[in-house]
Length: 175
Image 1 (cartoon, helix red, strand yellow):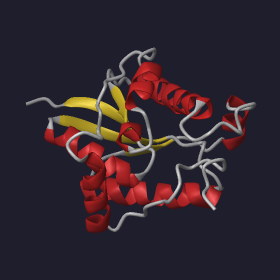
Image 2 (cartoon, rainbow, N blue to C red):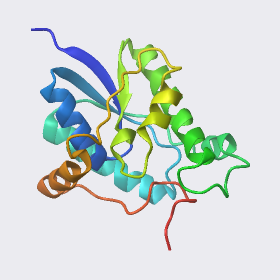
Image 3 (cartoon, rainbow, N blue to C red):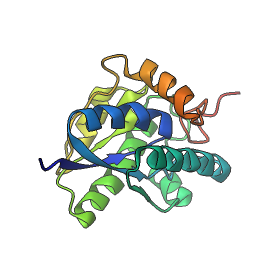
């Protein structure tokens, strides 16, 4: 049986754990794509990348790492710094990361890609789907369903994955 190949935009290992598990169960051959120029500071970006690497090794799946270009991301969301969490800045951030994923999928010959972003309890999957629908090859998976977030907590404990306490950008850091 030939498995379907998919590039999985990976915001973090905990979200990828559930998302990847579901895709693998459904017969997909996954490659993780860590593309997160929004994450700040760089030390946080590295912690999340290290955890994504750990998950890729546990599953024996490829992990491709995009360059961290926080300045380019800051320019992309310029003027929206004071937006509330879940507002226009987040939509721009989703678009930034999904475009990079779509470009990487095309470059590598993937006909399908999706994102772990729909697992987050504070992220609106409909907004993500609407943004992603303009990119060829995007496949809608709402990883929140079937207790996806709770499963990510379980898998994070099982695998010893780093769990962050904010979305990633400096504007979402909680006091």
